[in-house]
Image 1 (cartoon, one colour):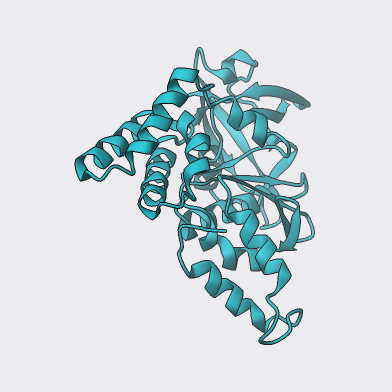
Image 2 (cartoon, rainbow, N blue to C red):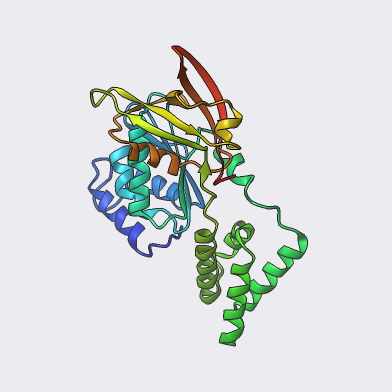
Length: 293
């Protein structure tokens, strides 16, 4: 297993020897090794559980432990944060903020559990045979004895765009150290360029926080912009959004917290909005559109 951190994962493992589950000096904490393997992926899904634990690609660990390991995330990875319905949005936001602070990821977004594979795949064009032939040709040129040829090949790989990422990953451990380094460099550049398009719902709003820290607040709509997804599903000025995807807005003290939730959503993201209107409560299904769609 290799990551962008060089010896850092090894340092995590050495530190984990102090764990009571490890045999001092002879055995590495097996959970630490499993967690590192799950964080060293192109896409990592982290699911927040109601009991305070998290599930990382099928492995359940304490959230505090995951936070210590976040720097081991692969450079350029896409991190998807999902959570149980009973987990308040404030906890999702805190995890996203820690991911962006601790690791060099290309994106960290909110999705419903199970949505990540289909959602991300829908944004990756299928590579043609000509595309793959060009990619393989330029990977071979990375081993050229001429520095200028290697640089041209690297630029050509980056110009192929995000569809090249999964195919380049097959060459990331090339036995030629020069080729492997340049492939990983190309992957890092592409990951930074492929940031998923921010979502746009099309509302102007105020946030009314709960009267106490554990009480949910509400989003009060002041504007619904014509032609937006919000207008398409029938949202109206005066509506009060109580929950989004079954999750209340508890523990959020200002409109900036709500803005942070929307910053973690992307175009195409499905939303179930629990709305209060004229004393009645209804659920409206919406999709995030593209910015100013």
